[in-house]
Amino acid sequence: MRLKRIVLPELVETQLAQFYKKTGGIKPLLFDFSKAAFIDITALAVCISTLVQRKESSLQTFLAFPESKRVRDFLKVWRFPEAVQGATKLPFEIFLLEEDHRYLVENQETFAGRGTALDALEFDADWKSEMITRRNFFEFTTFALETGDAIVADGPFASVPRKESRRWTGPLIEQVLSKHLGSNSPRDDVGRVVIYEAVSNAVRHPHAKVIQVVSKFNRKIKYKETISITDESKQDNYISKRLEGSLGISIWDDGESIANTLQELVQQGKPIQHFKLPSYMCEKIHVLIKTFDEEKKRVLVVKQSECPTKEATEPRILLSSLFPGISRTVSESVPKPEPYVEGEEPFEEEWLFHASPGMGLYSLVRTALDQYQGTLRIRSGHCRLWMAVAHDAYRIEHNVRYKCRITLYPESYPPFRGNLITIQLPIRDSA
Image (cartoon, rainbow, N blue to C red; front, side):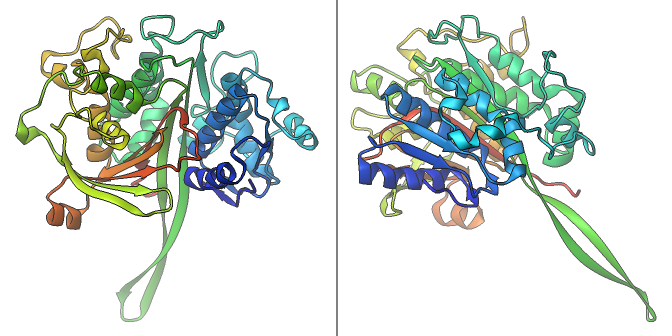
């Protein structure tokens, strides 16, 4: 797989689909990042999931490092090699081409930690290897038991969602969130809802042995020249700059797929809906289901109050996992992780949206999409789901609040190993 200059998750999986179709997936596979100038963190998570899947099937997989020193520094500072090792339980050198081993001992030079608060978060210049703090706030973080056993929500990692989410309430990251996501948005909600609910969801997935969290601000500065005429004889030119891009957050676990977990219960005739919200509180979603080669399969409008039946397809059940009250805990006993506020119960008026079963992913959608105008992407099983708030034309034409695209993967493409949730929150401020 000769990856191009811009490495995005969809492009990686397009090449993977071609590889599986041509070879059946049994031949050795090389992820060739040599020409990469930009690698999306979600693409790296897809790569790690594939490495785990192929390792479990005793198939050979290799990596070629980028020729770009800047991109190699990014992989090193974001701890991609450690993430591969943490997920596969094998030394990173086993996967890296032998001629690229020399890159593992080079010093990174791109990130200095000097400049803005965001620069300081991306690299702590005072960090030492013996320190227990992070060198990079956004780096890959792996949660796994040393024994290799499955993670359970009330076990040693019961506090992981709370601890990981509360990292996002520190003074420096709050300053960055306020600046880059807009001062009108509650800064705490990135940690309190987005991080907490996504990690809690991963901790509760059946048979998950590894959970990884990674994030990154993708920054792009655009310059604009403004002409101001103060009088007939004088003209002033001003160069203004605006920071564009997004904050990407990805959470991957190697547990059972979201849809499969719910579908097994539905097909057994067991309930998965705790309650129904009043009709006026349930929004409509315009859903486009398409094949991997972009062929439209079906277009429909779904209401959040609907519950899957025994005939429900995998795409429909995956979408339903985002609806209020939908959870396997209706029929199965599933431990709860520690609450966001240690030792405290939610306020009574917050009970419905934060404590009631089946409200975690729903709250995440409400916060990421409605509050921050971001997007949600889920890769799980044979599907890829993308969801955003519908723009005005969609709202008027279809009478919906959200738009959703669900892509079906070809039969030759094996089910995705685990579940990958990615949230993109747009940058809104002036630099």
